[in-house]
Image (cartoon, each protein chain N blue to C red):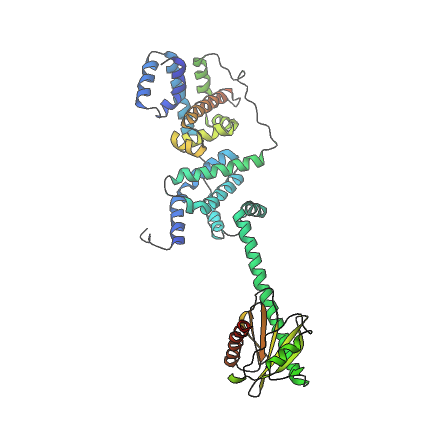
Length: 182
Length: 260
């Protein structure tokens, strides 16, 4: 820190490490949730660091975490396109997941609310839903930051997150894993 | 605020993302709406579950080491990016294409002139040595430039300038036809004390000769280009005298041209 008046290359190298290494876990977590396995997630994070490293001279301060997560997200989606181009997305049947009343839904949810069901329900969500829940509920980004990372208006973040949660809840209720004995 | 509007806002309300005004309006509605109260409770349940049970994946400690290693050899293609991807991004950048093209041209040009010159220098030295060995120094022996210059007429498709430097200690000995770089060239012979200088003159279309001096087996070769002609002076004279000679030739050539 004391050597801030150093040659350009070294300085930006040091700044890069200061700004970006602290986001390694956040980056890995999002990549892992989007890509579903360790190997792809590690590759994506490495690629994101390489891109950020090259683009770092153009980074003019501000929120380094949001900037880096934007890069990482782009890398992930590029990989998703390549990896899953042959797969057709599983359709979500609203009818099957319909529950009679809010009270019944609440009861059903409480019975099935456990880590295992949550995990598999999250895995079943479409990428854009899973991503927004990870960014907000696991990584603690505010709506405004998510809007910047995902590249959508803040109103879209608000409605997408609400829909994502409704869907997650419905998936948990519909999960057929063993019910927790409450 | 009606119920549908309120139901939409429960999620951001739970996240603390509503402005104060909207917050108060929503709370006003929820207070009198059992369904919204239930829904809000459901939101809380879900939020609690996600926050307490959703696994946050942690990067392996080796990942940082691996990335640091990759960053250190950043200019090399990394293991995760196929080499052709780098190539295709280079191809997409017109500035890079232009730059690489320019580089290739420059390198080729330098290589060509560097490579070409020594061959010519070798050849001219060989000519010089031969001219001294076989007593075939000149075809036309004359110290008079007005005898030597016309002699070339009809033997070459150009007319070389012949200058008289006898007053400066470089008397003209004569002229000779020679072959250099697969073509007939004029060789003008001068003397300095007991040394001879062969001055080869032929037309140039590219100005690659830029006053360089080559050393070749104890001989000096000085090359330059002037007024559309290439000049190669070869002699066993030292560099200083050869440069002095070349300088005089250059000045006199202009003088004789302006006289005509």
